[in-house]
Length: 234
Image (cartoon, rainbow, N blue to C red):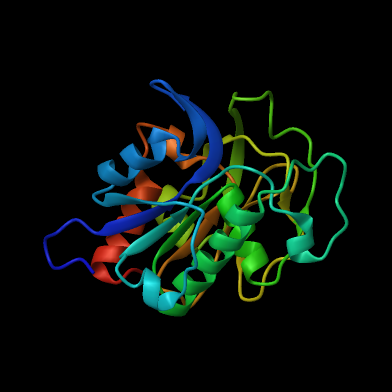
């Protein structure tokens, strides 16, 4: 764990995908660099967590915080729903590892920032379900859209970004039934849940948007690192 004055260690989940680099074309653990740079700008040191192995609270205790990154759809079997034909291919290894990581982090009261898919993983880890397709939040593959969000007064998110802001979005799934203990603290104009918090936790914030691509606005990553260093806001 971070000592006073050192940079907190922030674990960041990664993808397991077929990847070409150098002379190789192999399956690899990969991640958008934006996440890593955002953690560094926020005051932490990133630690890559591949979607392999078995994780529990004891194994995760060396970290000071956790980012559950975006990516592929969560398998609907994980939340007891039949598969919609618009749901993407399952990533069973990643689902299993990230659900374990989320639950371990919650057990440790580790600060968590859950981004896009990460917010959906957090919701499923707490017994929630997902809407398997929504329109209007994913303009094109590899292209981020923008939406305004209204933030609940008194929320941790409001203390970081204010009562209204514009966010980057790239998702076609969203929260349906909200997981046990979670509170929806932001919505898009169409009613889509854009952020959740876990009241009573040190710092557990899920956002459906992609703050890592903002570049000039690293407030959420700085808040995560601050919670990891200082004990956070309950």
